[in-house]
Amino acid sequence: MSGPTGPAGAGATSNAIVDPTMGTILLGGNGIASTFRVAVGAAARYECKIEVLVNGVAQPALTFGSSYYYGGQFAGEALVTIPDNAVLRLRVAGYNYCELAMYDGGQGHRAFLTVMKIN
Image (cartoon, rainbow, N blue to C red; front, side, top):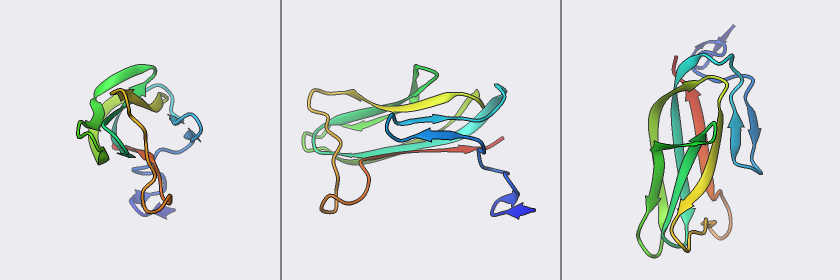
């Protein structure tokens, strides 16, 4: 069987559990250190910073934001080596008036977290 990136499952994390209410992704691996491409972004009404926690620890390479008073859209990505059974959580991490916003008349998403296994 073949998928869009080669053999089925290649380049994708299978068995992951996503909890959008908590902003978490539980990777479905066996605890083996692996490289992942993690992308994150948000839309904010005011200055704002978001970060990704891996097993409860903030990852500086996955902290992004806007110090512009009126906020805006911001995003970033990084390659990180983490256990393939880690829990990733997206959270607001800074500034007094950080409020994630809906754009396009209330349509769309306030934030996103995308995880793709590289090896």
